[in-house]
Length: 286
Image 1: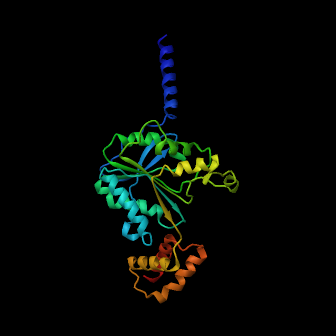
Image 2: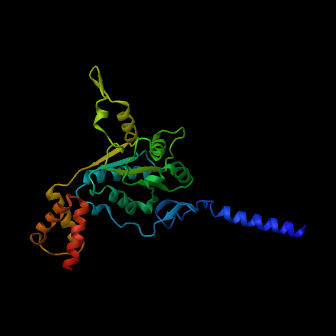
Image 3: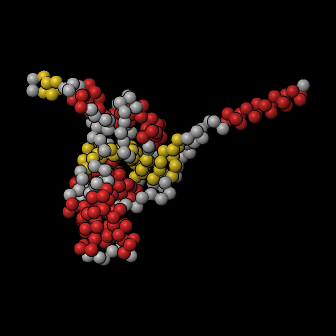
């Protein structure tokens, strides 16, 4: 009889060990004091916050050619840090124009004032309610960073984002904002046939249901910042800034043509292309 019980206990212990391997480890409280940037990670064995040990070092002063957008998001962020009313922000427009870098730079400016940045991938946005509830319990000021967003119509993560922004029965916490970037103004694909569903009542234009649904998500962001491709001279000015930053003392005549060819080959006069060219040129010249 004793041997039977021992055998049963051994089998139960083995069963528990196997089950535990498939139970996610509960999120651990991160070190909010000594770390400022985090990623929300989700796997079979662990779901929670991962510390970003080496955040991007970009500063607001490094971002050239987007002064108006910089001023608006900086003002909004300062309002947030000073516990004044502030808006969720959607940064949309041309690729490589500084949308993501602007959010990273805000962390470097204001981390010592309690700002914390949590990056959440698109496919993990379904966990947003859980992330927001966790942040609400802490005194720091949190920006949830969602980069390069785009959704399909019935995407579950789209519904989660919509709910957290302004569509849930519970009010969003005052220590959490969402800053998102996208190449699309309305975050969802737009089709020509949807515009055909629009109709007029008197002098008012009423969109079709599909368009209204797409607009309803982006409208939940209180502040929209638009980014456009740079002109040739704006692009050259950004190249010039980064070459000085990298310690290159060459005259503009020695690199201007190369810089323009670099942008032409990439089909983009963007801040990213300017930075990449400056790195390449500085690497060859220094």
